[in-house]
Image 1 (cartoon, rainbow, N blue to C red):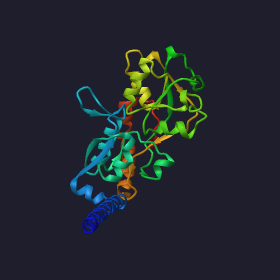
Image 2 (image 1 turned 135 degrees about the vertical axis):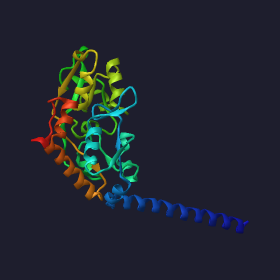
Image 3 (image 1 turned 45 degrees about the vertical axis):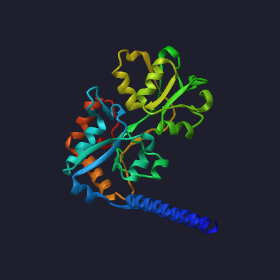
Image 4 (image 1 turned 90 degrees about the horizontal axis):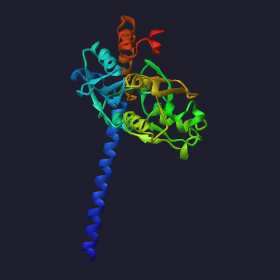
Length: 282
């Protein structure tokens, strides 16, 4: 009996050692992926994979036909066309974007991705290509005309979004006012708007780029109110692994070339008209 027991313990110990080695191996692979400069590999395969939330209008979203379109879709393709590289777009769970980047599932996060101190600890950023605000969208029928008007009311926000993070970072602006001092989380702004329209939430904290585009394309744009509060202005940039210093340099150079040759202005006008804040064109 003792020998059988010792044999079982030996097998269990061996299993744990193998499992530990596997986990350590996974960790080292992830670490190497974070520190590697992958530009030469991407050049050889002539493809780069961009992760996105494919419901984020007008940055990257699917039309009724299923075709993927948007501001960031056009911009990413234009940048990498300069280098003869095709862009593949991979739909991801937006709340897991940094994990997907570090795991190597995607090469870039390019989808209205705001620069924040928390994100900067995990990823590197390109130069800013678009400025954005977090705004509160309400239905006029709910008579909310200011952030203070959300007192005791239900707020919605997208999981993993910079807006959702702002709620906790600046509690006096909204968190301390709203019901349960917590926002309802949604996997996409599309689902959040469904609840706003149904009256299940009375306010939605959202990127101004999404809000303006969505409302403009509704049957009754006048039914909505867009309220600007005191959250800091945001900067959209491309998220990269910290080791991808060459790709970061190439993207920045590409954005500047598009600004200089007029392509960036054309993309701006296509998706926003003249109502857009683009630092590269100043």
